[in-house]
Length: 332
Image (cartoon, rainbow, N blue to C red):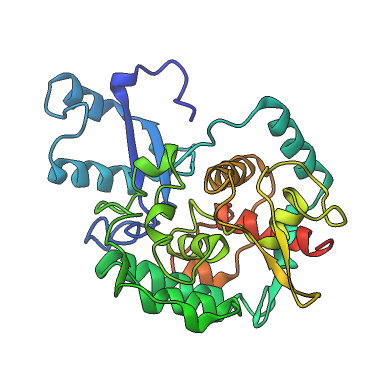
């Protein structure tokens, strides 16, 4: 994030506007235009600097009332006081080797991520249709996460959407992921997920009949900003297990083709292998890296932005995963 040049940090204002509450930070109807969700920084105007110097505004903008009044003033003078804004995702990629980052950069240059995203197709979910079932599930699981916690019924709906084999085997407690496991009370992703995005898997693996693919899909729908799913197509193309489909060596995790009486029964990701769930964390950091480095804006269907599920043009981990799923579908 770039602070305005030659401005002392003590005269800078920095705050985060959350996706879930960007439209209701202030009750006033006089604000001309709400900012996008993200983290913002700008220099304080001269009059506000004098208040800061006098100690009337604390460096952290102490009380909520003082913060709201100041933010209201800045928003209503957006063009005059803050001509440049920067937006960033909550978490930055961690632990990726330099050579892998170079491969990811090369992939972004060689492939149109926008076209891959728009070519995503699963049952009724196409770009032309506005990805309606994906939107419905995101709204459903995010409501549950904020109120009751993720329910076993939510998990079953995700499994139904994905046409999971043996859906009838799914069972578990009524609440499978406690409220605020993923999203804190203030609306931001839980800080612990930055370094340990695979942490919720330890709880989701207790659900009977749910393997790595659908564990990741539950997280993807509940917190699309920070999660993307990992399925057998992605593992076969970007990981190990299928020499015909393999194109990139980004992951160590392996998919296997099951058989019964000599006939193939379908691909799966064994949960007992060495690289699960550690490679899921690597996958999430790959998605984070690409989301931050794709130069073209993500062309979300308007319904997602109207529902406040997405910010205009900003890639989420789930968006990148959809594009990579489209790429993997060419080969697997």
